[in-house]
Image 1 (tube, rainbow, N blue to C red):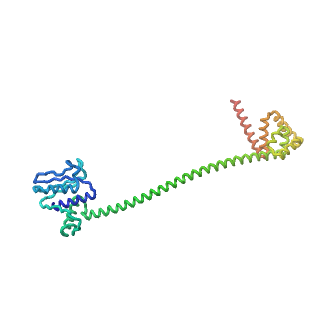
Image 2 (image 1 turned 90 degrees about the horizontal axis):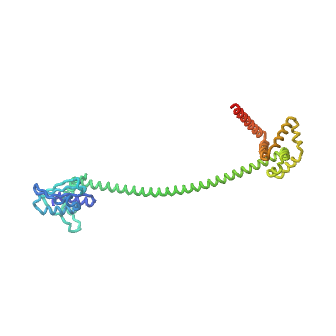
Length: 330
């Protein structure tokens, strides 16, 4: 086998070790005649591998009439595969391939001397150049170093990704815990709001009851409830609103003569007005009397409430008068 064929064989061994995918056609030539030895069109599965190449070359070298051999290399074995390299070797100088007889280390890597070793490396570098590998053997070393560095970076990145996944899981658990805590706080807030509403309602009712008692007590102390009680027969009604002391005061006032009221109405016009109110009240049934009583209770709190009811009544009276005039004109 020539040195060039041996160098090419070594490149194929390197590719096999690197698990690089490739296929080839091997053609032996005798003058102008070409004889296909291996073809991807005839046997795709066996058209690859350094040992296949070696066996084919040894068979070609047995026929001393072959003058050259060409190798066309492809990156796949499809019918439309494109050639990535084409090399032709002269068969003038042949040399049997050295066989490894033992594992005993030999000087110069199995070569006869340092010159042969250097020659092999130079030829190997040229073969790599023909295969598209820049920089020869040093280029392969640099590429290998770069691949190792990239592998280290990749492993570091994978480690960081694993840590980030753990952090993400912890954050998801924390978010879930906070959501559950938030729901608990919402429930507690709703319960507190319900309690507050109940307390406000109870407080409002208590205040209203107290105000009613205070108002009735005020009316009783001025003698008005006593007069109304006797006039409108509200003894039983008041008994449910007043405490014992207030009811007693109202009863005592009721038993007093209406002269206390009449004394305050010494003016004839005022007395006439009171008489008209009394006559009007005598025409009402119990439900309407209760309404009048409620209005009197409200107005008795102060002059402001009395004036407020007056202004409301005056405005309503004017509005009714306007509506009646509009209907009559229409």
